[in-house]
Length: 334
Image 1 (cartoon, rainbow, N blue to C red):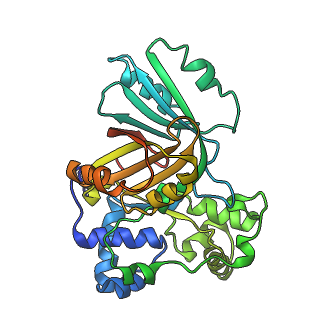
Image 2: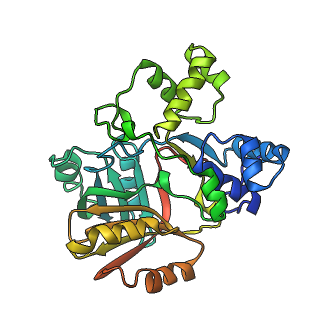
């Protein structure tokens, strides 16, 4: 089957299935049919089509928030370059494993990127390599201090409240939430769990039978451990789909100034907004960074002129993304 073109918008039924997978990446066709009012045969057919042509993938989230930490310490980079050198700098950054995300804005000379780094370190990229590059005209960096919302937590807002409630996972077990140890997601892991997570990394919808064959563990053991991971809130999945397939043609970066006594409340309000897929408290004059999807420029204007009112924001700078140059994991076709 031919892959959907980048600008094609999925049908309402397919968009609802994508949203359902965002709530439960391992959702069965029978359960999806029950909640969404579809036939199981229709769900199986549409899920197969969406996965077969690469339009939609469900993976284990690579940036899922561990207990008490998460992406804190990573750097937001804002890089301005000489016109004509943009593609060269983007390609050099994209080749680096420590740069998981790169966006190019509509200004034509501006790059937004995220760099994984140790908190407080003198990262060579920021302190030496980029400043010494003649094509780079300016460089700003901001450290992520707190995560309010990650892309893996964003939900396409096309389901009803009862549907969302039916698909929402139960709260993690209290004893796991309270744990504080160094393994993935802030709790201890073991060889069995790690083998399952590794096998699910690129396809989080593998069946228990396939997982048992791939890992060499008995299927009954695989089923039991998957149920345990899900109950503990540690089976964190992410749906990879180009937002343009969901009718969201505009992505905007927002750099906001908020008084310190309102930072937490404003960050939470942004994270709860259906358009916002990323919200972070950061160092620097713009102490709150956000990223959001919109169907068009009118919706972006409405967000800026209405939805941000009353949140204590004293200044906002908006940059529109023209191209998502790198995503980790990569979206289909990129």
